[in-house]
Amino acid sequence: MKFKAMDKKTIPGVFHNNTFIGLVLIAVMFLFGLTVNHNFLSPKSLENIFTNASLLAFASLGQTLVIISGGVDMSIASCISFGAVASALIMKGSNANIPQALLVLVITGLLVGVVNALGIIYANIAPLVMTLAVSNVLNVIQLIICNGSPTGSLAPAVGFLGKYKLVSVLSMITFLLIIAAIFVYFGLKHNNYAKQLFAVGNNRNAALLAGINVNKVIVITYIISAILGCLTGMLLLGYVNFPYINMGASYGMLTVAAVVIGGASFAGGKGNFLGTIIGSLVLVNLSNILVAIQLNDAVKNVINGLVLLMILVFYTREKAIRQ
Image (tube, rainbow, N blue to C red; front, side, top):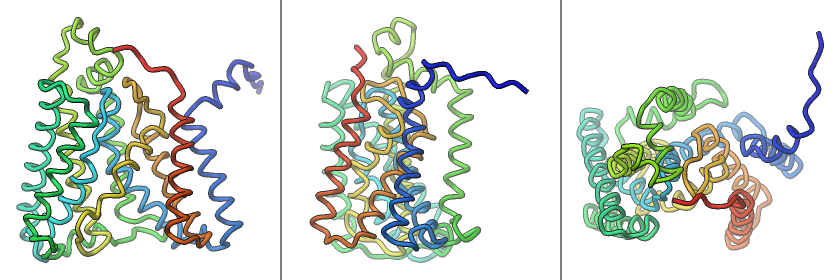
């Protein structure tokens, strides 16, 4: 059997492929983690890495769609926090209350997404500013509904989803992510919305001339993002076991970073969920390495921020596409 020699032009292309670079980063981080702590890749540690990366990937799914459209959603963190606090308050430890909790979260996500989109479309407010404003409002609502101190508890079924392990390194949350990734892959591949989404992200004016209802696509995208954020909050509650104020706060910039590391462009028109999953693994590995080194929280946050900044600068080096 003859093997075709690799074209010289192919080699630089491989090193500019975000998926390839992300996988290399993960491998390097695993090896470095082993040098710091020989238990870094133990079954328990791997399960922790995969589960936390899965939660971040779930939170980042909506962000992936928004960034592909040429926007950004900074209200996701507040949606996650609200989803956790509100679902605990409604469920009150009973499986019978899960449908009611899901309905509230979906309606909340629908309203948040519509407000975000309408502000961006009709008030011409920058996505970053608009979604941050909505985020602040949602945080206040979160405080009001629980009087500043979250009450209630998760239903056993939600706790099962958050804690159950299928095998030693595969939790139910990771399994759900795999199912979601397959669904998203085939859904986007054979869906008219996906084609319109990429067209809007690539060039909004050209999309309009092609007869695409750009405003409708943007509204749908922000609604999906907000609903997924609220539902991720319920899933996070199942993993953590108890609600607390702003428990999704750390997911704000992390969702953006995961999407960008995964190959999306801030200019829009580019991105995929598989890349977002890889980006999530990179970020969770980075956090675990800093914990393994046993640095104090202040130093850990500074290093985490600097490394995150360098990664984002590296991955956003391409020129913006004109809208």
